[in-house]
Length: 168
Ligand code: HEC
Image 1 (cartoon, rainbow, N blue to C red):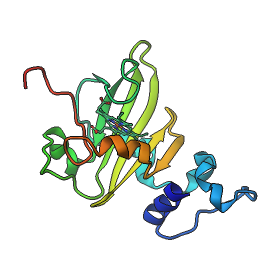
Image 2 (image 1 turned 90 degrees about the vertical axis):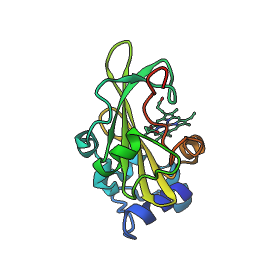
Image 3 (image 1 turned 60 degrees about the vertical axis):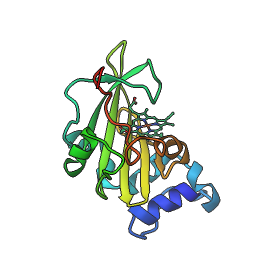
Image 4 (image 1 turned 120 degrees about the horizontal axis):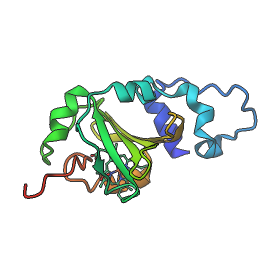
């Protein structure tokens, strides 16, 4: 409830989500409704096309430590105004509002596409999180406390950043 309500309050401009064909969804269970059913109200920044069009932060894929370590490698796309801060993270350096960071995972063994982990800085104090299936279907969207709990501990404005070269 809280996650979807917050998400829509922030991202849907106060417009109630259309519920075409979903007549039995109760308000209290909205957070548990399949996110795909709400796909039509997802903002354009969350589409696979716009995320993959963002500038790349790294040329080479790196092995992930945070999500399913060992299984995936990743590249990160970052919206341009945030790119410098992302590449050289320091605790004092906050990302601008509206920043979008998308981590595209691929299976290390097979190279096949995995999920896409997305963060968007909606306001100074609010990060939205999302997980997309490899085909772009949203699996989870919102202020997702599980994601936030870990990213709050990150060294720079919720960002872990790219792995540092050894010795730096
Ligand atoms: C256990 C801690 C942990 C949790 C929980 C977690 N992350 Fe991460 N995340 C990391 C770490 C560590 C990185 C750094 C890159 C890597 O090794 O994966 C990262 C990187 C990212 C990035 C790239 C930006 C950056 O920080 O460099 C995004 C986007 C992201 N995570 C989204 C999410 C989303 C969405 C969720 C919830 C579904 C989530 N994360 C949950 C630890 C976590």
